[in-house]
Amino acid sequence: IPLENIRNFCIIAHIDHGKSTLADRLLEITGAIKINSGMQVLDKLQVEKERGITVKAQTVSLKYMLNNKEYQLNLIDTPGHVDFSSEVHRSLAACQGVLLVVDANDGVQAQTVANYYLAHGNKLKIIPIINKIDLKNANPEKVEQQLSTIFGINGDEIIKISAKHGTYVDEVLKAVVERIPKPTCVRDKSLKVLIFDSWYDSYRGAVLLVYIKDGIISTGDRITSCNTGKSYEVKLLLLLRPEEEKVNKIYAGQVGCIICKMKYDEASIGDTLYLYGNPVEPLPGFNTTKPMVYAGVYPVDSSQYHSLKNAMDKLTLNDNAVSIINESSPALGQGWRLGFLGLLHMEVFSQRLEQEFDTPSIFTTPGVVYKAKIFGKKNITHYKSDEVYFCNPSHIPNISIVKEMYEPTVLGTIITPGDYYQSILHFCLERRGIEKSNKNIDESRIILQFILPLNEIITDFHDELKRMTSGYASFDYEDYGYQLSDIAKMEILLNGRPVEELSTIVNMSKSVSKAKKICAKLLNVIPRQQFLISIQARIGSKILARENLPALRKDVTAHLYGGDVTRRIKLLQNQAQGKKKMRMIGNIALPRKVFVDLLKT
Ligand code: GDP
Ligand code: MG
Figure (cartoon, rainbow, N blue to C red):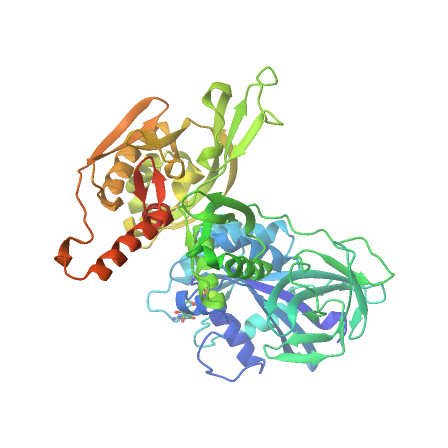
């Protein structure tokens, strides 16, 4: 297929606006799948089917005839959720154009805005599409106005469709051919291949999803990685239509899969491959997306440490936005600290671990990375720089050497019906937000911007926002850097002894309420012992909250009425065994479960 006849594009949209449905229709029209095959073909992962969201970008090559010419349209379906924006970023690297899909009823939403600017910034041709015109309360005129107000899009560029019924979807295919430029590639140059996704297949090892930037790749070629310098023989080349089609060659401008017995820890997304002996300048990789949210991950049982490690390695091949470092905790044993792009990202990761690798795990409450500026060399410290980053409360530098504390913030965009303005404002202020702007986008909707501490939005912010607006508000955020913050380490004491793994980092303005909450929760989860336990929360030397857990005499053999001696001995042995597995705080034995209950989300 000549380059003139190839188009590479992706579909981007706010969640639920119909990306996957449109992708299915495009597949049907071009004969790639049978009409009415039902399920969304491109959402392959179990978690995607259950949650009805797209997590991984999927790719498919379509054959399309227009004016007696055959075109190859390479379509990449992308996830719309903020947390998966790294997938969107990557997909864009292989595209020359995008279909920007907007729901005719919901209109422009927070992720529509984010996605638009992403495509715009990558200088891609944008084809605006208003979807779901079949809905009774569809209001395409209003959406048209929003697109014009926010992005300056002309009405005559917009294609109005119903992806569900297939209405005017052929117009979309025509526009792809007519408006999106051909790929800028050179076929008679040395081979240059961009890896933009990869996944692990138990039979074939790493499968690489690639974009051929220059040259031609053939089975049997020897290829070398710019990253590692290692070479591989190309065993198999595939096009996805969406069924795999074996081919002998893939030409520049096309998207396909390479199988070359690469080990999963050698396949890195963003890497460039070249023909052995013909090195090329590596393609610009991807701005490595940096994790925003960190959580500890531990095996449910310490004997599962290795199988969990193995599963995580394989899963991170497919999701390189996750970062991993080793961590251990006296209560939970050996584990890791993982960095995620957001909370949904973290949930999906843990769900995939369990579903695709059958490895249960404990995830601790997520936190963010703080920064401390410390006094310079005059102090005898082991720090290499005067800026210290930490997320684990036990790594917080001693207050005596800290000049200033900082926490990460985001610029949040909220699109909502104007009626909710007051309650959203109140809510964001309570989350320590600062209003930056507010603007009408049509007669009933507004777009708001807030600067918010990341820590305030990583747990339940989005859910709360949805709840208070009956689902009408949408939210997206981008990194806004570090800002001064009044944070401190809050310790928990049991009978006067600090329990390191229960320490947290808190903002002073919320310290008392948080202290009370943790003490009350501990009162419920700590098993009563033969003596009284005082539970205290403190910052520095100041006690912020206190609870007392009354004593209880617990005799495991009490209900046995003497009779069965062997049984009695066995029970006592069990109790002693159990004690060994417990974490001792002074003379208080805390079962692992207490920590799991407290630390997990
Ligand atoms: P995605 O999250 O952008 O991939 O959205 P989906 O394609 O999964 O669609 C979300 C929901 O909208 C599904 O329930 C679809 O059936 C529905 N939907 C998609 N397109 C249309 C359409 O043109 N008309 C109507 N009525 N519903 C649609
Ligand atoms: Mg989808």
